[in-house]
Amino acid sequence: MQYSATQIKDGLIQKDPEIFRYLYRNYGSMIVGYVRKNNGSELDAREMVQTVLLELWNAVREGRYQEDGKLDRYIYMLTSNTWRDELRRRKVRRSDELHPERLILTDDSSLSVAAAIVKDQRIEAIHHCLQQLESPCDDIIRLYHLQEVSLQAVAVQMNYDYNNLRKRIFDCRKKLKKLVDEFLKQPTAQSEF
Image (cartoon, helix red, strand yellow):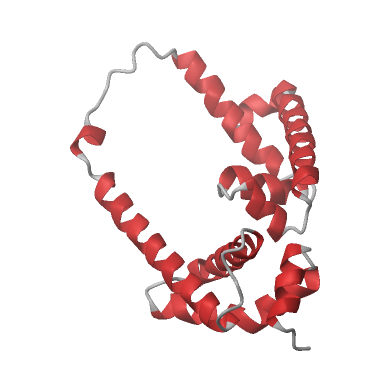
């Protein structure tokens, strides 16, 4: 089915899942192709599809996309600008990695060894329990906390209302905390690490 620019614009504003599927089907390969041709990996390309469609949604919502040009041109422009920004960020990150101040070794003697061990055990327990968390909680926590995707982007990607997602992520964190606390109380938990 073909949608007009107005139907797409209205569908994006209403968060119509069919419009998002249409955009993925019709523009996903163009975005992937652009990223792959410009030094991006397959993972980069798939993430860029999400990012560009989220940017399109924001542009429509904020009134920046006015339908005065063809949608495919606008999506191509979003793709090229967003991918160039990402490459620029990566270049800056790479040059920061070897910054001399970051290579200075500090004396952490003030840090208690016991506190460090407890912190490490808790981090390992969180990763262990995250694997036991059921969907969609595991997806939400992985996207938001581990991949650092914005809550708005997670809402769009998972087709949730933003306010409902805020409540859902709170509940998911409680479930994960409960699993971690129970796991750490088990005598075998200490030996696993």
